[in-house]
Amino acid sequence: MIEEKERNEIIEEAINKAVEKTLLMIPEVIGNLMSSHAALHKINTKFYADYPEFKDRKDVVANVVEMIEGKNPLADYQTILEKAVPEIRQRVLTMKSLDMKNVNPTPNRDLKGLDILEAERPDNPHGEI
Image 1 (spheres, rainbow, N blue to C red):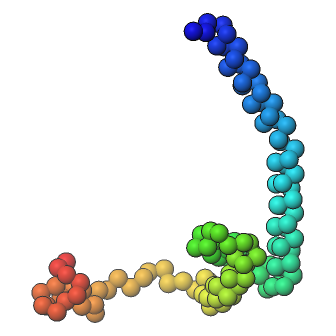
Image 2 (tube, helix red, strand yellow; image 1 turned 180 degrees about the vertical axis):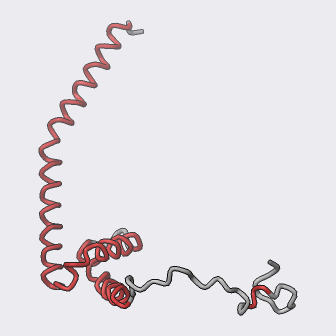
Image 3 (spheres, rainbow, N blue to C red; image 1 turned 60 degrees about the vertical axis):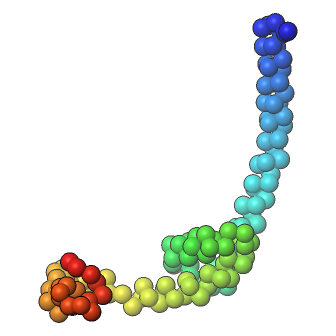
């Protein structure tokens, strides 16, 4: 059986080797991150050059890209951007058609015209209220 002192020395040596190995890998990791960032920046620059109408709607682009990426987690970034273009166009058109200046401050809360209040009807699909 090993003594406590020997055991601690072995553990300390293992920790020191692990720390040293980790520190030696930092330049490689940072290099990979920088190269990945540069590649994504190049793709984004080309994307906005190809679709200049999206430059002012980066919020919509980011939202749609995140949604498509969530649905296709294994797809590469270029494919995700290609799939996002029609959805981005659709959302931008929808947002242009919205009137954000003339908003009715009091919504219509009259439910008399809706058949959800007629719970006694046997053919009521909404169930009992």
